[in-house]
Image (cartoon, rainbow, N blue to C red; front, side, top):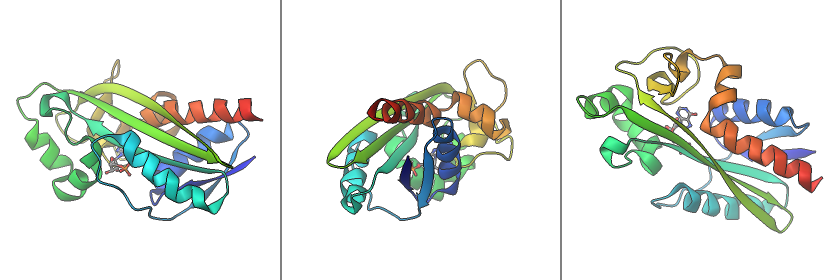
Length: 182
Ligand code: IMP
């Protein structure tokens, strides 16, 4: 079985390809920027992306992710990409200095096959590091420490991140769904 993963992010593509490979699914990278609607939850963003991507008629997978910081009332959340581009890791650490360190990564993934569509989600709870550590992964990985760990995702190797991450949980659900669909 083949599917197209629509995203501009090579880091996400590598993770998705590796995870779905475990389910015998071959993932092609459709490196297209889909219009992102302004919405205050990931599911609405994904549904809009999916409506667009599904027009090709192929089996397509999209996803949207964000880092939610309870001490900032969930910010940056759906604005994670914008916050990353503007204030960056350092800015995020400055914003959260002296506050509770809890943070949650969330992913919503959307799959379209024929006329049918599904959304699934995944979550990884953890805390913010006091400074960026590690060169692996992408985005906020160097400042996120998953629960039960002392290292950031930036210090995890790709296989380890794929065992724990928000994306891995969502994409494994996609893998199981594809297996049941046959
Ligand atoms: P989007 O899902 O492409 O909108 O990503 C939102 C922002 O969160 C971007 O700045 C990504 O780099 C970042 N991000 C998404 N997934 C991850 C991840 O697994 N680790 C670290 N940062 C991520």
